[in-house]
Image (cartoon, rainbow, N blue to C red; front, side, top):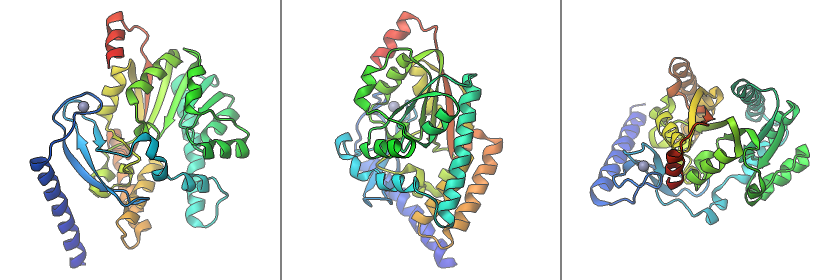
Length: 334
Ligand SMILES: [Zn+2]
């Protein structure tokens, strides 16, 4: 037991010294979101899932964003994305973990549908699901009576959705065909942190939403209790697939620059458990499931009183409609 804690302590100090070394001896590029010059090292994380490569995370004190330094280019990211795993999760359940995953997904889909209904004040309408993955949410919303348009960049997932749900998804370039102000709701469930061009995307969403429409974004939260507990081993850093690492403040700042006002935010409770168990597995701890469950339970309990401490958050933004000409100009320059 003493050896275990000693190893943990050595790892914490090694990580701190590595960050200090970077701070003293390395210069960093400007912040990709706001252009400020004074980014500082935040963490050094490994890609446990695929490549085992290490990536440095930087924090910009100006806009508050934490970002992955030098991720693979957009044209080279596909081998890092866990497409096979996502497709496998669409299969019928087998084994305890798989059954638990399917159960939690069903509950999450219900919760997401409830958020859309309550926050848009609608029981139907036109919905754009950006980064639709294998199409479970799109299918759920179609069953609830919504007219759903799904955008997914990977061919394999578009084929899965067509075969499984007979729901045709479109590729990114086809978004150019969409008419302005044609959607009541736009959703991104754990997608925004993967996007290479967040400014362009938010501008595009602003134009696609009808006046008063809502943009719903779910992202991991780097200020969560479980993120603090696991440090660089927190599974939701998920480098290099996650390019941006948000907290409530950095997310709202970014959205506000593109004409969106925060109306509501709430936790996705299963993520506390899922991310904690995955983090324990990445650290190769014994009894990873039990330990992760306990940390996840603690994180979830804290989030009941402090939503900003939740493992991941759903942000509901409403499109501002009284933007002046000057603000529109400023938004374009961003
Ligand atoms: Zn910045």
